Each structure stands twice: as C-alpha cells, then as structure tokens.
Amino acid sequence: MKSSRVLLSTVVLAMLLAVAGCGQPLSASPAEQATTVPSVKPKKTYKDLIVGYVQLGDESEWRSANTNSVKDAAAQLGVELRFSNAQQKQENQISAIRSLIAQQVDVIGVAPLIETGWDDVFKEAKDAGIPIIVVDRRADVAPDLYVTLMGSDFLEEGRNAARIMANLTNGQANIVELQGTRGSAPANDRFEGFREILKDYPGMKIIDSEDGNFTVAKGKEVMESFLKAHGKNITALFAHNDDMAVGAIKAIEEYGLKPGVDIKIVSVDAAKGAFDAMIAGKLNATVECNPLLGPEFLEMALKVVNGEPVPKWVPSQEGEFFASQGADQLKQILSTRKY
Ligand code: AHR
Image (cartoon, rainbow, N blue to C red; front, side):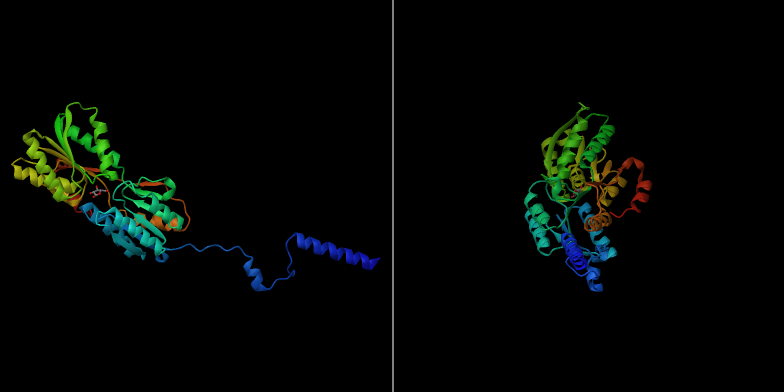
C-alpha cells in the first residue's frame, strides 16, 4: 500500500514537471542558470556608431556649411562617418545608399536632391534593418520608410520672404524669381509659400520665374536673361537662396542698376555672402535656413540605434536679417556665425 502511494506521487510529480516543461534536473549548474537570466542589450555610444551621410552636392555656401557641420560633429563625437557627395545627381545618391546598405552601417542620413524617386531604395534600407534619417530636404515617401526628418520649414520661409518683400515695396512690385533646383523640396515650398502671401497683395506681380539651380553662376545667368527681357520694369527679386542672389547682384550691377535700391532683393539662407551683400547695401533681407544640423543628426542617429523614440520632424530654429539693421550690427552678428 505504502509503496503504491510512493509510486503514485512519483508519477504525479513527473507529470507536473512535464506539463511545466521542466524536463531538467531541479538543480541546474551555474552555467545553465546564467542562460535563464533575461539579457539587457547594452546601449551603444557614439564611438560604436557607423553612420553614412549621402550629401547631394556642393552647390552653395549652405551646402558646404552642412557638410562641415556633419563631418566636424562626427570627428568630435568619435562617430565613424562614411560620407559621399553625389555631385547633384540622384542616381549617385541612390547608389551611395545601396553601397551603405551593403556595408551594413548602423544608420543612413540622406539629403535628397529632389523630392521624388526614393521609394525603392528607402525600402531596401528598411528591409535590411537600416534606419534612414532624412536631413534638410524632404523626400516624398511613405512615413514608415524613414525614422525622422530634420530640417527647415521651407513653406514658411517662402511666406516670410513674401511678407518682407511686401513691406519693402509697400505692396507694389514687379517681381522676378530665381527658383532653386527644379523638383527639390525647398524650391517647391518656397515657390508655393511666396505665392500664398502674394494673393493678399494685388499690386505685387511675379513677371518672370526660372530655375537658377541654387548656384551663383546660374543665378547670374538667369538674372541677365530677366534683365534682357524686362529691363527697368523689374523692381524686385526673390531668390530662393543667397548664392543666386549674389550672382544676380553682379548681373544687375553690370546692367547698370543698383541692387537693393533700384531692385529690392530678398533671399533665403543667411549665409556669409548674404551678410556681406547686406552690409554693402546690395541685398535687402535674407530669411534664415540653418545648415548646422550635424550634432543633432548624430544625436538622432544614436537614439534610433538604441531604440529610443524620436520625433517624426525635428524643425530648425531660424530668424531673419535685414540691411536696415545697419552695417555695424550686421558685422557684429556675422562675427558670431559659423556660415
Ligand atoms: O535645401 C536647402 C537649400 O539647399 C538651401 O537653401 C540652398 O542654399 C541649398 O543649396
């Protein structure tokens, strides 16, 4: 009787262990016990990071400042940066992203040349488990294909340029416009934002508008053609960036008119060239667009790699600067700026 009770309790215990999935001896060795402790993945630091940055080119002062900001921040923080310059070609940017995917970097930052055409390559990065951070210019893709966008509100920049122009001209102007690279987010948005405000000013007319590709040389060339076509009828210029305004200023002077006086000029970026032109009284105002995104870009990269939440858009903090502030004040401000 006693022996059958012992046998029964042994069978019950064996069944309970089997149900609990514990087919192992009750006392595991220290090595076996260690494997059962839940493992916490150690957080990466900047020094562990390998980050790709796919720059679109070097068309402007803004672009050089952006490149330097990313390179300097990586050097300071000890991040391994794999940088490429696409020389204004989207196909170069796409192959650079593919190469970074093959290299299995931790994060890829991209400043997209134009808005469209990114779906496939961004999806390839996502499928490979490599997060994309869009820097500066927006890409027209589904939100799940990138982790965050860092950069300016280009639409608001266009609106602010129009508000400033309305003040400078008392709402009466024949405006020519130098657009940034066709199909790029800043060109699309500055174009749209400018027109949005102009709707309230029937005396302000855009009499010509062309692509100046964000460069000094093209800005000069297109301004020459505007002057040839419209001559002294032009009373105002909106340039989508400072470099094109600087080129246009040369064209206006060569034509025999006074930039900033005969033709009021507003541009975007607030780069050194714009400050020099405002100090000389040749540019009336510039709306700031901040290129110094390097430190924040790497901060976002580290957060993303460590699984920390990041906002979908990290907007830049920006101001406006005017020739009317006076040369002394502008010189003082310029001495504190990095670009
Ligand atoms: O995307 C930002 C724009 O690109 C800047 O306004 C311009 O100067 C640059 O080329």
